[in-house]
Image (cartoon, rainbow, N blue to C red; front, side, top):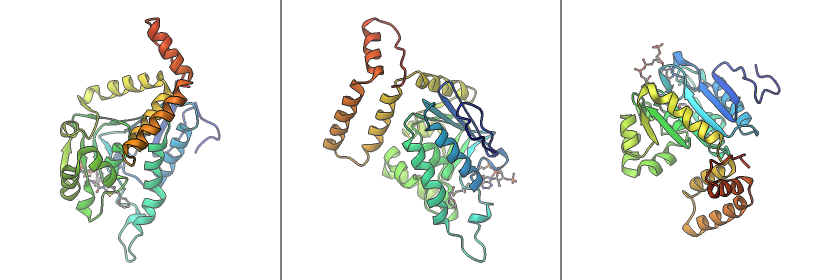
Length: 272
Ligand code: LHQ
């Protein structure tokens, strides 16, 4: 049950945990006995939590999973996707759930940090890759499991993978479905960093606290510009940088950043 206005109060969901305090929104996928795989209820709750995150008070989002997995992708025991007498319409699952989820994450106007605490498979792997900063525990692994069940990588996999690791590695991962270790993912530039398991929570916390005190508008425009570069030519990107810099030059945080530099002190960004 979701209280009508709970922006800064803990919100009760059944399949995720959500909390927003001190500018930090935290989402934990929470179906540990199913390796946090997605059913439609979890999709609905996550959508609601992301809407709350985008609603004003949050300056960063931390996404992680409960238990030994990050997320095993679609819950394959969910009747909605079960191949029965009538074949399921998997396209509607993508249209109604995975596409809006990935777009919502990418469009959030603040950094999204993903702490991959364990296996990330199928749509779970690509959900992680859609985040802005991906940290992974050394024991975590990434599996493009789709080919094992005759499907195409979804949740943005065919877009994200080649851009992150190049065509050859994207093809190998997607066609072979082999397990990629967190260390290899870091070495390939697929994720930001791989850390020892017992350091994951602390390292993620350090990053989200850093962002919570950061120049949120500037970070939002930076994220937007880097994501936009995949579809832009150089001239369009230079135009975007010009427009964003014009906007940011008028921000309180730019004024504060320059003042702090001149006065040799730590800036106190307000996020505007
Ligand atoms: C699961 C799942 C799971 C249900 C583990 N579902 N129970 C979009 C649109 C529509 C349809 C289709 O898909 C998509 C997007 C996708 O995400 S497709 C890809 C779906 N995901 C997978 O194919 C991954 C399936 N899982 C696995 O391959 C393994 O479980 C991994 C490699 C993730 C972990 O292996 P293990 O560490 O050996 O764990 P396990 O296999 O023993 O799993 C533990 C339990 O979790 C087990 O249940 P049980 O009752 O036997 O303890 C699994 O059945 C359950 N589980 N993934 N996706």
